[in-house]
Amino acid sequence: MSEAAESEVLDIPQVYTYHVFCCFTQRPPQHPRGSCGANGAAPLWERLGKKLEASGRRDIAMTSSGCLSFCQAGPIMVVYPQGIWYTPKTPEDIDEIVSSHLLGGKPVERLIIVPRI
Image (cartoon, rainbow, N blue to C red):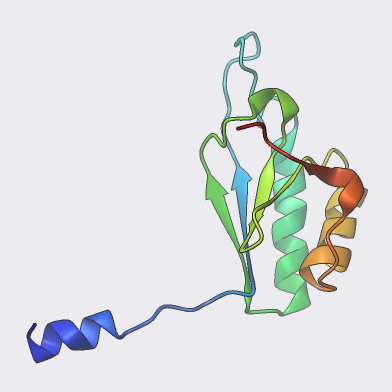
């Protein structure tokens, strides 16, 4: 491996304490699988983004994703590294996930779903 290539390999990107992936998929209203977008995800994810930005925590990231495959339960978000799946339905649910889990380290049990594998 060349010195330049080795240098690139060692250039490790920002590592996050929490990395949240939020489904932004929007299918037509009558689609048989449904979608997070059709279930009202957009305002929840907007709130989540604003809350995280306001926290000033640079170790928490939010990334928009495509379908996370549990459409009927949407809106769906998953928090890594734990792999905790949430189904928030209200702005208050978002507030609780941010304050309890993302800022406080305590997952919100009542909003967790466990995807069947």
